[in-house]
Each structure stands twice: as structure tokens, then as C-alpha cells.
Length: 90
Image 1 (cartoon, rainbow, N blue to C red):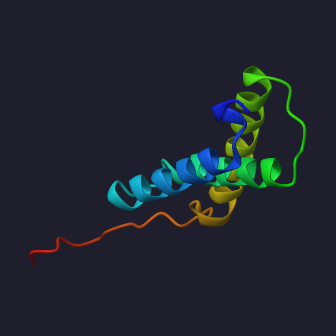
Image 2 (cartoon, rainbow, N blue to C red):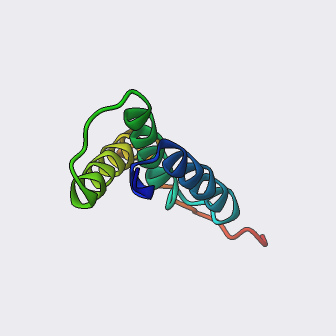
């Protein structure tokens, strides 16, 4: 089997990206980590993907879905802008 078709490669990538997210917080790498984990799960259950381009496309779509879901759950709520009316040093 080719390396990008191995489930453990995508799971290892998910752990690496999740670790990067801990080191540089801001939900930058977490969507990619969730996408890599989901693709790893798809490969464990042996979903057939034909080639490198299809694998990367599925990874990109899963990462986008994860990012949009996180944005909906963790994003700013409407009207949640903080307005300061005094200086912190007063």
C-alpha cells in the first residue's frame, strides 16, 4: 500500500496537528486535525479512495466541515461585542 493510503499516517498527522494547536492556540490547526482523524477513520473502515488527489480532496472537505462546525459552536455570538466605558488603570 502507498503511504497516504495508510490509516495510521493520517492518525499520526491528526495527533501532530492537535499538538500544534496546543502550542499555537486559535483554532488554526484543530480543523485540519479533525479532518485528518476523520480520514483515518474512513481508511480504517476501508472506504475506497482512488489515488492521491481523491484522498487530499476528502481530507480538505472533511477539514472544511470541521472548521465550519467549530466556527458555529465556538465562534462569536451575535451581539457579544465587549464595550469598555472606563480605563483599566482608573
